[in-house]
Image (cartoon, rainbow, N blue to C red; front, side, top):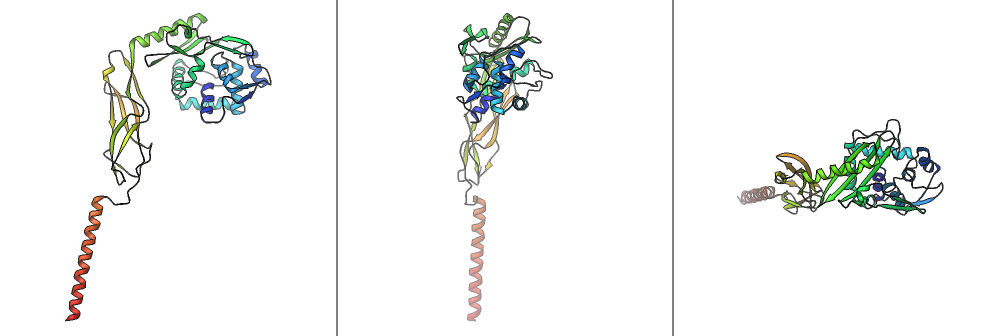
Length: 338
């Protein structure tokens, strides 16, 4: 979650990878007080944001977590508030954060399901993060550390994501692997020995790849329609899918997945490019598994010329008025002559 928040901030332009972070005494003390993993930062040291990201993702640096939190939000407490806000946005209903690095704290908890959900959204929103998590070793200030995710070295498609350990809860591994365009996520928690978490996570990943297929029912940017436009300078507009519609099904059931567009009979101008105009339902065995918004592919300005029925009515009205006026003029002229 701290990496998620920081990468969001980088994308938003709030901070940059080469920004320099000053290490506080609090960040330095965090590691030694909790006897936890460290990047081995020193008080007052200036470190690049990019190096701190590596220190968190590869070396599980608790000190790096606190340093990033303070740099972005001014205090760890303010940063943790952002973490909890993000958790709500992601739909993590069984997670509560009390600090930035996950060391035991009163009222701090999560679940395997929430962790898997977080990982899925994290990878979708920040695919660039995989380069950090797939790196097998890291060196800073002459101290060499290896990534504790042993599955990275097995050539089985694993490219992340994070190990964890606290005495109260045991050894954990959030593992993800990609094969033939399909990504699987496995979460193992509570192992009593470090050597168990890798094999257990691998079993889950292998089970997933063996028994499930992920179908691309809707391609991001794929076109639908066109849709009829009323009162516009154009009489129709094409629609594009806002995102990819993936559905995971059991092996052999790939043909049960379908994409069903739900299009209105027409839309009324003006229309802005990117405006949501319709939806496509991704269905699995007749049940809706996902909804994808369909967006206008272009702007459609409102026409200054009235619609044809109204225009015909106006013209007919003008004919009647002109005809009546002509008759009235001739009648009035005839009376004067008489």
